[in-house]
Image (tube, rainbow, N blue to C red; front, side, top):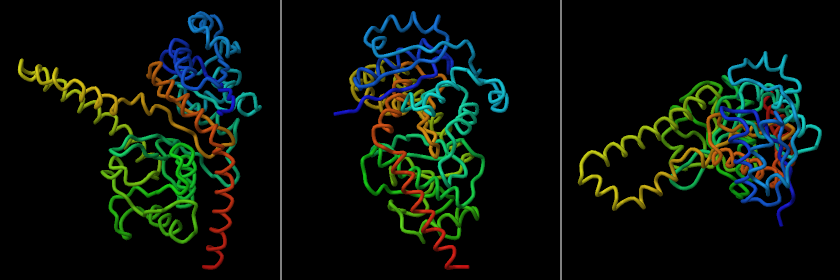
Length: 348
């Protein structure tokens, strides 16, 4: 039986605030009846929306604050002025043990800066990463980093691989997830020096995963591996490109189906298939990026999503908490760094 879990929600985050966050939590509660919620934000805005969802209201409490972080605020400004804001208090609830997960649709840079300060990186982790679920033709894979860091050393890329594998075990329920480094080719001689060095390290050390070497960009959507590892600059571009391409294809199909009376008739006959396609391409289904490498679970929802999309981010946080991800990841990282140190010493 699922254990009760408490989620802290930044009710003021994102483009729509409580009007999306509260209904999103209500959807997730229907899927996971063991959930409890703490909403942080302006009580005068949250309470009327919460009143429309009696079942959710019975399992929730509201912590009032008038402070919030704007979507355009710089991370440095958010750190200076954000203490006591809805985003800050949401993360602090996890740090204090009042909640198992923090979820916010707010400013990504501010959320990462606050999360690093409040939750702190795990032992041995130089940089946390943002991991995102990515639809594939087989199921889903995990891609990280998709924007927390610009650039990454070989050591950081190897840590990202361990973190991604821990998330894959939690969500996909596979003991030895497959993983690959995103590169400009599959040959060992190709790519940046940091990527080639990380490749050598991952091959040299025993890992709690199945490392498959380099993969190219077109192989992400094929579902070739469970975990795709990349530094944040290229990862964020890849993510945004994929989202834009999905919308572009959707518009192409819509325009083509509405072009003539015959094509409209064909679209009517094929509406079942188009409904399935739309569901598979719906970004709300995999909404939510997880900050990995911190002493606590923090999930970032897309700022412009609707209630269904926010519910997906809440679901993601719940599943990761339920899996015991943090404890397993800490053990994996400790063992990996010990083995890596032994290999490095042997080559000195």
